[in-house]
Image: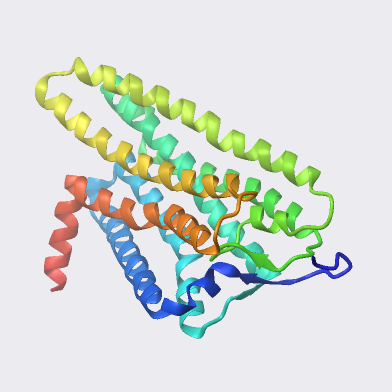
Length: 309
């Protein structure tokens, strides 16, 4: 039992310790996931930026989504790769708080961006004639900016409340930092943290999910009443977004599931598998889904790759 008079400012990422036996294999997998995700995301952003025909709200939202993936993966995977190769398993408090800020910002921004996409698809299908005025390129850009500012302020509150605590333990049962793990190591009063954290979590999950469900149900109902070709085109676009959202939700549930098991005897290896699966799945898969299933993006990415090679 740690001495509560000692305040720790450096922590051990237990997950990295568990990965040392096969660190080169894990490093190779980490590099493969990060490089693939980053390259595909970059290509989506590049073709969206350079192709004037893609300057539409839907592609702008997809661009915002994959830019967020690039941000989230860069806060997590490069450090993991370096730590595996250097056999390092420690992180400072400031480094831990910074990583927690980046990764939790990524998750919150992803939720709100999926919500914006769902609303955009609903407007496109339900109000096709008014859609060009209801959702302009400028409106979509302003929505993405508003999401970024709101998430920044909200996560700053979470991190600030965590930074003021004292910590009486050093072992973080993960391969990356997040504030929930730090709260479990605190030896002070975390009532305010819990109230703020629960309020923030409920706000960024319940409200967006209700709006997403409403928009997609309404969109699906309207799709059934459209002519054959229009219905198929709208449904294909909708399925792509739903698959990406589903993968993100499953990953988030994996992470939430791990916290629910915190009081149960669970091996460190199991914690590593659950946390890495939850965080890495959408980072690795969603850019590929949009790059492959979205025809306009797929054609232009393929054309650019042919020009390069």
